[in-house]
Length: 69
Image (cartoon, rainbow, N blue to C red; front, top):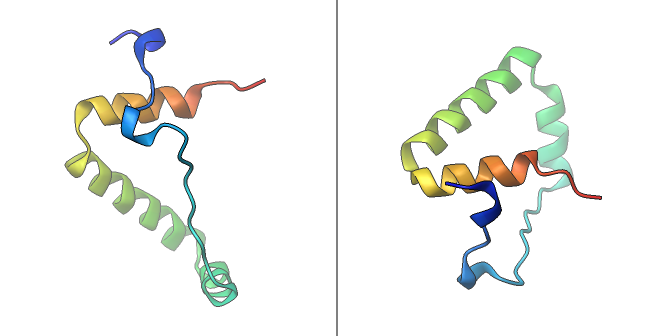
């Protein structure tokens, strides 16, 4: 898949992403050890690898590494 051909899905056009966390959630996360935080990241990546279609994974990779000016 060519990088220049990767565009947002039409149904997502003009939409953003929003996720809200509470102050309590932030305080609890701050208590985690580095090992716990890294384990959480590892497990989240494993889950995404299982449920994401290859096209979505490539789209996320491209967007993640795109430099915005």
